[in-house]
Structure formats: C-alpha cells, structure tokens
Length: 157
Image 1 (cartoon, helix red, strand yellow):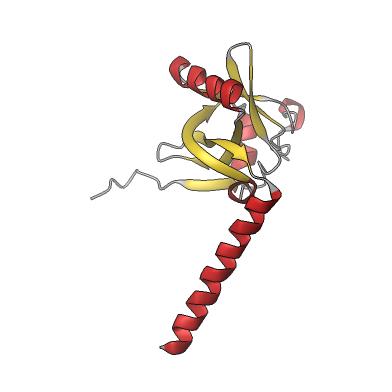
Image 2 (image 1 turned 180 degrees about the vertical axis):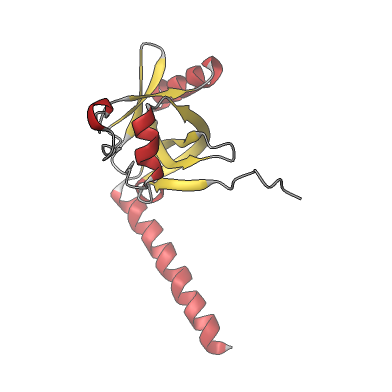
C-alpha cells in the first residue's frame, strides 16, 4: 500500500513528435538545475520541450532551446525563458552519452519533463538517431494499418 505523502508522477511537458522523427535507442532520467521561478512556471504547465535538444559543453550536458515561460508573479527575480539549463547526471552517464553522440552520430532528445514522486523536476532524455523520410512513411503506414485493423476487428464482432 502506498504512503499518503507519496505523489504520483506528473508529466508537465512532452515531446510527442520525437518518436516519429527519431529512432530511439536508449532513455535515461536526468535531473535539471532550475531556479525558483522556473519550477513555479513548470508547475503551471506552460513549458515546451518540442524543439529542444541536449548538447555537451565542457564535460557537462546542457538542455538547449527549452522554453519555460516567465513566472507572472516573479517580478525582478524572473528567469530568461530560453536559457540553457544544466542536466544533472553522473560522470559515467555523461561519458556514455557523449561517446554515443560523438562516435555513432546520435542526438540527445528530451522526451518528457515531469515531477517525480518526491516533487523533483526530472527530464527523460533519449539517445536517438534521426529518421529518413522513407522511415517516417513506413511508421505512418504501420500506424494507419493497425488503426484500420482495429476498426475491422470491432466491426466483425
């Protein structure tokens, strides 16, 4: 039985196009270094990670181009909406991710921004390879066929 104080995972932003545009190899959970107004703004649910990616700089992994809008009650202590944000990972994980990006031509794509059970902001990061146009068409055909197959099965009874 779960504790009363334990909170469920609340997804605040999701990159839904990532699974269509990229072939995802591996996922990893990373923490994010945020300021106070950024946390409050994310809790409002207006943040987007659709056009963002992660990159390595000086032996650290940074989240680039993620939009967390300014907190309305933040006055002069507000944050910059598109600033790079440091991802909190172990050294071994950073080395593994940087090796995959350098050697194999992979990209680091954020999939979800959420708060875990303890109320900490986390980012699900994927090591992915970009799909070509014919791969995207194949994915779309499979999805359409599975949808049509479901309709036919329901119609048959």
